Amino acid sequence: MKPSVFAIVVNYNGVSDTLECLESLQDITYTNFHVLVVDNASSDKSVQIIKGKYPDVGVLETGSNLGYGGGNNKGIEHALECDAQFVLILNNDMVFEPSMVDALVATALESPATGMVCGKVFYFDRPDIIWSAGSAIDMRTGGPKLIGNGETDNGTHHQARQVDMIDGCLLLVTRQLCDKVGLIDTTYFAYYEDVDWAIRSTRAGFKIIYTPEARAWHKVSASGTVNGERSPFQLYYHMRNHLLFLSRYSSITLGKHFEMFATVVFGLLKTACGYEPALSRARYRGILDYYRGRFGYRVPPPNRNQ
Image (cartoon, rainbow, N blue to C red; front, top):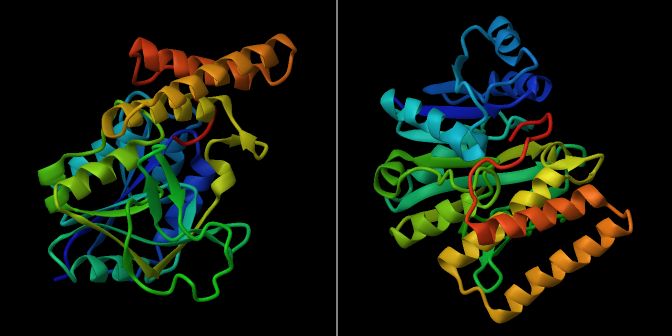
C-alpha cells in the first residue's frame, strides 16, 4: 500500500473557495489519500455546508480563529494520530492537477533527507503564468522571494531542485520532519511562519525540494488583499512578523531600525493627510506591537481564509 497522505485545508468564512478546492481534490489519483477541513470558527455556515456536500470529508472545528499556523497544526496533529506518513498543507483557494499528490510523494521518497516538497503553482486567472516554483530567502533582509513569479511556463523551471523554502499554500511535509523539527510556530499567527519552519527544517538537516511534475492553480488575489490591494490585516502581520523573523534568524541592523522608523513616520503623515489611514495604521501597529513584544492574534481578521 502507498504511504498515507492527509491533506489539510484550513477554512475561515471561505466556503465558496473551499468547496471548489474540495471538488478538485475529488479527482486526485493517489490512492491512500485523505482530506481534512479544519474550520477556524467560521460564521458563514461553512461547516454545515461542507458536511452536507462532502459527507466523506473529515471536518475538525477549532472553536476559535487560530490563524494559519494554529489551524494547520490542529490538522497535522490529527493526521499524525491517524498514522499519516505525509501531510499535505493546502490553501483553500486552489485547484489541482489530478496527479499532483503522486508527483509530490514520488519526489519525497527519492531521498530520506527530504522533509518538504512543493510543486509548480500557477495563477488561477492566468493559468499559464507561474506564481511560484519554490522560494528563496534573503537572510540579509529577511524576505522570501517567489522563484519564477510572473514568468510564462516556457521550460525555465522544468527541473526538480532544492530550494530555500516553500510557500505555505502547497506544502507536502514528512512525518519524520514533524517529529524532529516540530510543527508550525503559532507566534506569527499569519505570514512568515512558513519561512520560519523552512529555516528550522534545513538547520535540522532536511532538504526542501521543488518538483515541476506537481501542478496547482492559486487564486492569489483571494488571500490577503481587498479589491486587489493589500489589506490592513496583511500589512499589520507582514510588518510585525518581518521584524520577528529578523530578530530570530538575522541581524536587525541600524539601517533596518531606521527603515522601520521612517515607515512609521511616513504612515502617520499619510494618516494625518487622510491618505490610506487604515493601511497606515496597520503598518504602524505592526511595528509597534513587535517592539512591545505582542504576538499571536492581535487584530480582527477580515471575512476570508487565514
